[in-house]
Length: 198
Image (cartoon, rainbow, N blue to C red):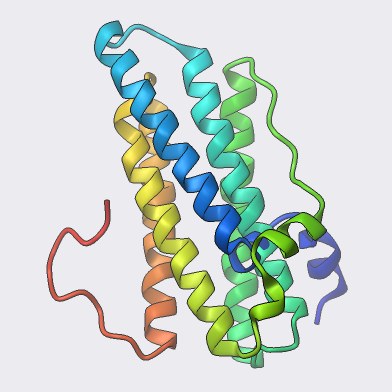
């Protein structure tokens, strides 16, 4: 495997695969923040509130750091077939792009982007020791991608600046694409009903 991929991503995208419980907590935190911001937004009636947007975008950035780390962990696990590893590297690249867009949004708003945690923290929170097969890794990634798509969609109404609502919709679309590809790789059926996400 490409050494640059491993070193680059060790601290970034492995989270999607390692972050089971921790990502669930992060997604819950994003939902709580969104709920509070929706109330504030209704009181604000569209007034510009960059601090609130920075808080939400930074929470999303922490999810992207986790996702990058998760894919890194998966790539280094030795559990993935070459073809699956290549897709994981592709998805990790998408998440790095998400990270960069979110960092740009935060700095544009005058905020300070949150840093990625050490990879060991993601390994622990995702309970990586329980991953023993490629199927385990793919199922974890599937859950994380679904959670990310739903979190992004849920936060859109709470964002004050329309540009960032558009960004979050694009991020959610990428997560839904990842979820769909992983669903196919696992041989699972696609949803029978419309409006599955969000």
